[in-house]
Length: 471
Image 1 (tube, rainbow, N blue to C red):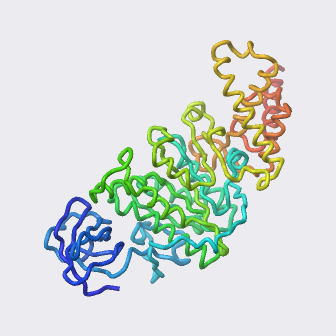
Image 2: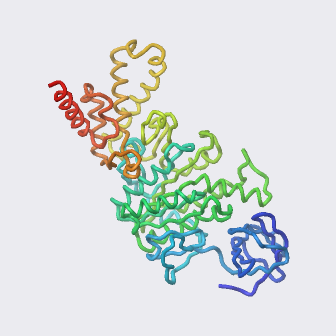
Image 3: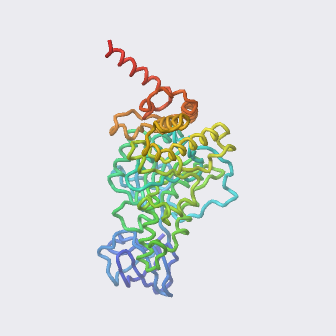
């Protein structure tokens, strides 16, 4: 609701705008309109003195000058909520950007909401199946939890996210919300068309703060997506899958704003308020008595350095950490998840069951032993190992290949039909490999398959081809 409180621009420095008010100062987070037809949207971030506020622009400030009139809207940034937003794509202001018919009158809610109180939070631990073997076995996800996809540039974070959307929206009856923070416009367009072709768009909402937008817009798009997710959880009582790509861009946008506002930088140039800003966003993602918001977040790791403050702060909020490895990408083992560095709070016998827990531990042990033997193999060769060690290497290499999987979202690039594998089939395959049932089957037969029985079918087909050629 608009008020008669008006101010005057006294300073414009990039995205930072100082405004003087004669009557009363607007509160923090209030949205102000300035420029021609009030098209320039700015948000109050601090009160400098009794008459001046310092704001950050959420749109480009081209054409803004000192002395221009500024209108106080009397409210904060709002996001649209309701069933009408399903299958649509929005920007940070709630405008549709998919070139379809504009939406009719909608409900709007402030993007600045408090996290649910502890009394409303659910204490029950449930597994969230993805259909991806290596994740479901070694790093099971929590319903209503937060999982992070950690990796440098080009190791497959976005591909893994889009595959999870495909699998989960297809199998679960919840709502999927994709939040693109600092995304390239190409990625947004490709995702929209892929989801439309896959037929899952009707239960999905997309919100984008693109790479070319000011840091203020990129910083608030996560809050806008969460407001939409909270509506479906609290009002519709539906489970929500919230995918964020990329949470590092949220921290980066906060660092840009902090620098523009003149704050003293902290370690490695990050903002001193990074922990608080991240917590305000992450703590709203929760499992309550009315529904659950399960979040999967891609986390870019600068220069593959996991001690970077952005990675360290993000780790502390997660129930599962899925670490992508550049070495496994180079070896062609997709998804390129490092099973020894990835972890999950759900991988406990009381939650996943004794059989699953014991199998996961045995898989990790086998892969760890193989990792220790790699240097010896490189120097002396496989023949110099003891028979026991050779068996370990054979099991580990077969496990590595069985844990690869063709994705639905990469069919056009690989030519391989995508596979979704149930947890029971994935556990059964690993158990049979560890019992040496596939000792005489070549490793290549286990590469990029779904269930373990496909390896035997592939082997039989190869043997028949050899017999025909021999005849």
